[in-house]
Length: 237
Image (cartoon, rainbow, N blue to C red; front, top):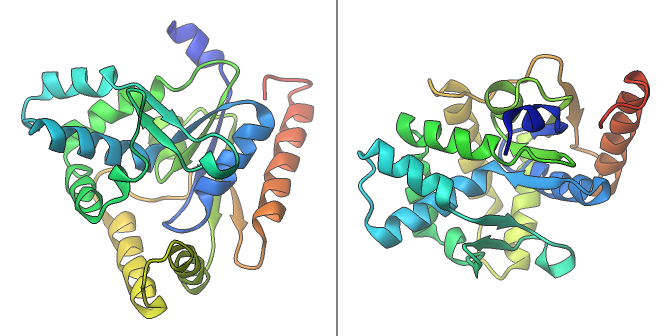
């Protein structure tokens, strides 16, 4: 993809802490706009799965970059397939959500060479007609020139309750107290890590979804998109 074309492609960044709902919101907004969707967190899980399968040497930076850029990745669909993830045409939705891959992804995510390789991969998602990207550093590191930046947050208690309901609905036996503790610990790690810490991007709009439904948040984001277009006099967004 020509870099000039990538620059012209609009990007909406939705960052926020774990379990803030940014994934669901981003998917719905992307679907409404007809944009491509990037789940940056899942990229680390996908890479972790592929590295695990191949017993790959993470110290080989050149080979790692080639591996990352060669992966054919597709996020989501609609309805029951909204959470689907395909890797080289294979549905790996379940494989990347195992406890083993989740822990492995957390380990490789702090390796500078891995983050650098995935940075290039994430930027490659920026193609016409546009992109909605969710994560923790989309608006600060990956797409600092994004046309619209949103920071989605909620209280730790509200996020823990949402994650609890989500897991219980999938038949996973958990305790809300444990989820709350893990979320608080994750927040601290994300905010204080040296590499790409969780920050509120400059010129971003903060949305507190503590008392809002998914539909209400999506409506707010779409209103922001509409207002941005008006400001730009019919711009690309």
